[in-house]
Image (cartoon, rainbow, N blue to C red; front, side, top):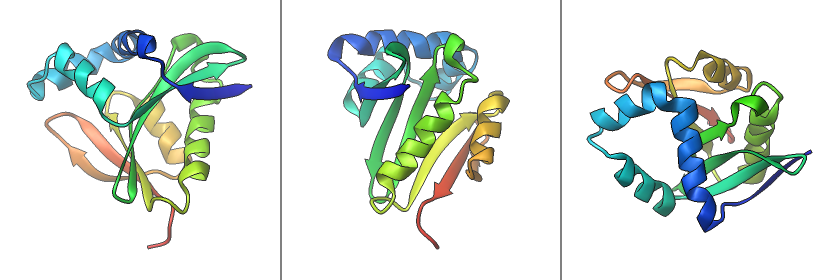
Length: 149
């Protein structure tokens, strides 16, 4: 069973480390290109939007980080520990967000690094489409409309 709860203050460092562990291959370069240190990123992570712990059968599986801006929900991050990947948890999170935000936002938007083919394939299977590319950062911005138009 999958559960979610708002991140506790003491979990932010653990979540940042998990992000570093799972996405270091492209996150380091992305931060350099954005001229942002890990300390700056950590402050942003704590201050912008909401972070939720993701639990599978009571065990911490990872986290997701969202921010609603106007009528778009931005999924800044969805990071699962490697032992929890490939079990449908990411799909369950995305479907839950769609259900929770339908009628409140027009779309869910996320960025996916081009090297993360597995995640991009998941997003495409769930109906997300590329809407623009950030070539310098090697990110595709994907969106799923929740309202017609």
